[in-house]
Image (cartoon, rainbow, N blue to C red; front, side):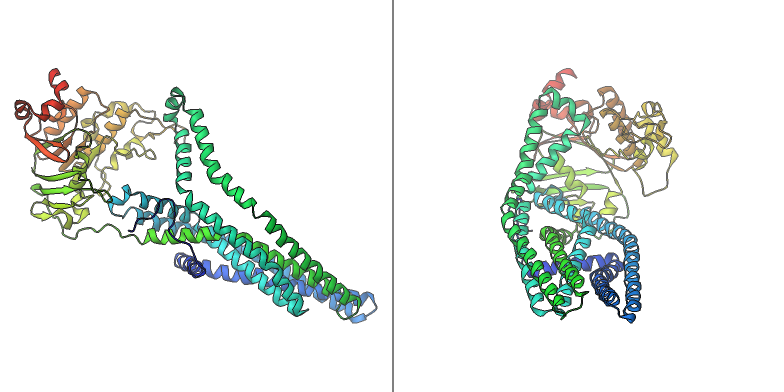
Length: 607
């Protein structure tokens, strides 16, 4: 994807693009809910034309009443007929409003559900590198905002269309009274539309140029509302500083926008005066016509209402246009995001547990960054083997794991599973053999302790035997069974059970044991451990790894900074600047007295 300047959409929408965008909104909505388009079209025609028809009969009623008052015997009967028709039209319009309100709520649910589902599926199907790509993150932010408000965008477009039809219908209706009054009315509303177009462009430019500002402000607000962060914010005296920074960012975004909108107040007032003058001219004209007996009395109400509807439609049209540019711009971003290529999974089936995993001259750098993270790495992991990957921070350990998991593809070289290129193997087939545990393993705060463990394997029926074994292997049973509802307790203090029993927050070590239990329950033949027990005491860690290493049928890849965790590995690989600089057993590496010893020197003295 071409790189864009941060904080901009890279485009200025012309009229054709806007029309195309509106058509796409209608197309997306029709695909999600065909009923929505038909309801909106019907509603637009009804709410635009029916009031004018009602006004017409109200004017006839006034004329008939005046004639009846003047002594016309038949005029009274006509007045009653017109009243009944007018009342019937009013009831119809009210009834339609009630029906439309229900249908709109239903349609909004259908649209929100469809668009939201599509967005999540697309996001979770992207190439893994995009989750670390700032441009993709910006695009997703805008797409998310558009998706959340999509139903309302459709409503706004429908309102614009309704206002436009109302304006056109009112001008056409005025032609039947006087063509030059219709021309004056049309000319009076044009300046407001032009001014609002200019203002909306400024608003869109401001919005696009302040993406980073809003994101920073949102992050500050999110951090300030995290209970776990409050202690540090107060201890370090950051509260006032962050509040001031938040206000500064808010002013840069919102205050600046308000200030440039203020510059258009004078122009808008001028346009309003022009509209008011057109209304006065129309009313004086029709009044003089009535006095001269060239127009019936009811025409005054007719003209007054038509002018009012024309100006009201114009103001509504202009008001809705103030944000539609931004919506349409976000639509293009949404479409661009939805058209991003999804991850290309391999098609080769992996029908049995592989006997080896082989890195052959593998080098890798992240997209948009030419610096190599791994350099010509070659090693073989045999089935049932326990290997350890060690090195300083930034040596390439976690990147090695990402390539092994198939989340990234090598820049050069190949990762083989047996004799098959990992890039060509079905991801689903490969991942079903893997169990991955990191120090930042997911915390499923929406679930109970039991479900946090069972989520380790959602592809097979629940196994109570595996569940009980996993609890014991991770040494998680004792503290979980002490929860108010035991294993069925929520592990988040902000979620309580139906009977009022509160959820309970776990410590970092307890969360790691819960994640270990989930991994044990998964019972994968290939286990990847990336600092999974950093918050667990050394003795407990030793016991847990002892249980793991007893499983001779398991292939274990461990990343750790603790000698006690890695010293029993069959092979230890020492990474430095993305290269394997040493390899061997713990005893062999200690005997070499090289980089491995220098890295673990303080721990080796204690052993």
